[in-house]
Image (tube, rainbow, N blue to C red; front, top):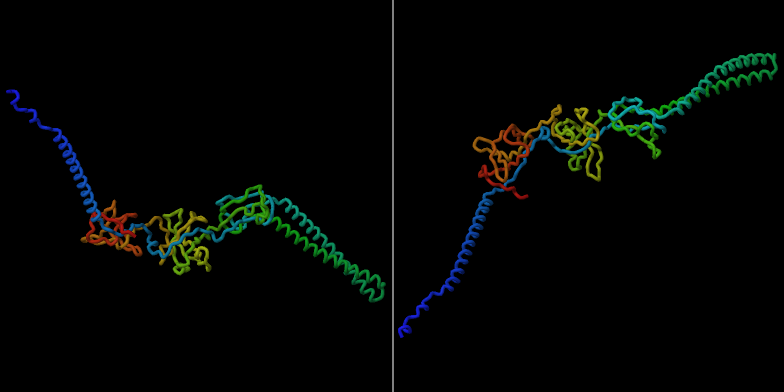
Length: 413
């Protein structure tokens, strides 16, 4: 009885299985909320940061600082072209034969009339010698014919008197007259033969001269197109023959030929000053002048050919060099300049802050206020003595709020 009335304490045990399950779910939700909040905060901070960054960027227009010459500041128009010798010739033989002598190389200076090459001419020399001998023989016969004529004339005159006095038969007179006429005809024939053989000698001399290839004018040998031993023919009449032996140009006749658009040709006139820059020597500027505007247009390219003369030139200028021509509004210095360039900037890029003229230079997406010193004007630009260098990108029309460190972005075009 005592044991049956005792309380059953095992029922008072706590069931922890529910608490464990409940605690696991609550902990997971807490971690989820925690990480979610961090992510939202990060996104918000990122957005606020970049929104503030974008909001602080100022849209600007820019200008690139350039280096130009004083002449280029007065430029009216620019064009491209090539150096061309106005006096140039491909020298060829007038006869056909094998080249036996070539006395020049590329770059040699030649004088007008100088023999620069020669063809084989033994046959021509023989023909000349033959005609000269014929001429000499003909000249030798003439005195004999003249002597015969003189004798026949005296005899004829004597018989004319005798027959008038009827001292000789008429037949003797007729014979004397016939002899006189034959002698006169012989003199005429010999004189004609002399002229004929003299003409033959001249023809043979010309034919022989054709084997000599001479320089047509003072100039410089540009190319050598044939070598000793090759067949040379006029105009390259044979497929295996050379036409031109050498090409010669008069370097004093060099000009630049440039094509100018039809729409701009009214801005060009004869005598207009120019500045010539060769691609080979870009630091040297040659003064020039418009020599001629060719009075016809190229319908395919819609351009007009202009010829620009060099006012000053040196030995470095060669035919077929490419060149850029700047047509100027006024004459540049008569002296060639070498590498003289000035820094130019748009006037809209220069502002005054305090008592100092400044420009805002863009570097890495932000601007830097840079003091500048203005030396004068370069056409429609300002010349900068100090503060800027070629290639700097500066802000045009900078607003009052712009200062060092301000973020900028280029205005969309």
